[in-house]
Image 1 (tube, helix red, strand yellow):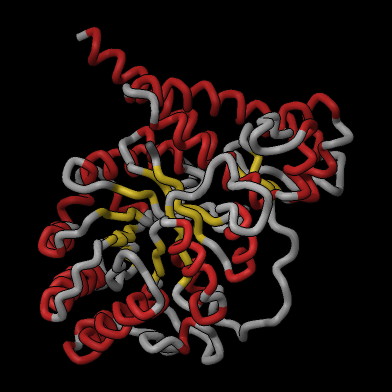
Image 2: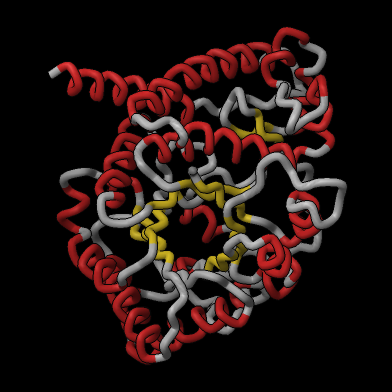
Amino acid sequence: MAELLIRALSTDAALLRRIFGFDGPRRAAAVPSRIVVDAHTPNSAPGIGDTARRAGVPFLIDPQTYFLQDFQHPGDKWANLPFGDPKIWTPADALSPARQQDLIRESVNHQIANGATSIIPPYVHLENATGGWIEVQASLWRGTRRYLDDHRVTLPVTAVFAPGWRLLHPVQGPKVLGAAFAALEALRPTEVAVAASKVAAGVKPEDRLMDLVLMIERLSSRYPVIAWQQGLLGEACIAAGAAGYETGIGWREKCDLRVEMTRHREAPTDGGFGRRPVFVPALGRSIPAKTLTALRSHRALWSQVACADPQCCPPAGTAMLGDARAHAIVSRAKAAHELAAMPRAVWRWNRLAEHSDKAKELADKINSVGETSADMARIDTSAVTAIQAVAHQRRQDRRSRKVA
């Protein structure tokens, strides 16, 4: 069974209690396998960890230490954590024995103190082969193993490996990542979470996705692999052999750590973020709620985007808009489980090929209608186009090998 890890915000505390059946008439038809929160969230919403423990699901706290690679506003919540720092760090700073030991100690203790059931060692964004950050990551993994052993911390370890898309190259990537992979082995993680940035981007996102697929296949021969922050590409990662994927609810469906760093440069605001996008199973992604609402007046399109699962949404998909967050969790969890239940990889790729064909056609129709509607935002088809190309190629490759 594939795992769905949901990244919850402080505003999702009540939702999670309801999903797990603690506040409401019943438990949802499908629930997250694990709950993940940002590093600062336990300070503002300690109840999320309590809900996870009560539900008996693992609870992970992402230290997000890649923020050290950019400057953060002094008032930012992450910058004010015990291991946070608003100042930008260089690789030399991160390799300083004293600073590195403090970073490891404070980030690990923060997770333990707030009830994490698995330790995520400090990690950095490995955007390219130069700059010295690969050496930093190797040192952080080795240092974390020493700290855990010295202090007899026996919790499972989830190692977040955060390469930029260039380092996913199946030939050049492993060559330059040798030191990091050796340190990863020394860390002895329970699993590896691959946070690959900007995969569904660029001129040829299908090439980047294929490289990610090959990286997952490489790593999964040694460790269970989780696709980290990959809501758009999560099912493709499961087809490639990942044990599951992590995503936000409506937001944060793709991994771009460089962009995440820049969002914390400005002074934090008390205002909200607006209405969350709504997950559309037929598209494999979330779209603005305003766009989905506008589609209700287009009967043919609405019948294709509305959730028809009676265990998830009432007839006509009304709960899809009225309870969009619960709908996203249930829909994603059920889809991931159904895909992983297929015993052969070629079947999984075949299903993804068929789904992505339909999703691309539907997205094109919605975009065509949206050209004459101010209420409809254009749907980015980069991810579904990449999945479409890779899925068709992988199913043909596997069929060819079987015939041979």
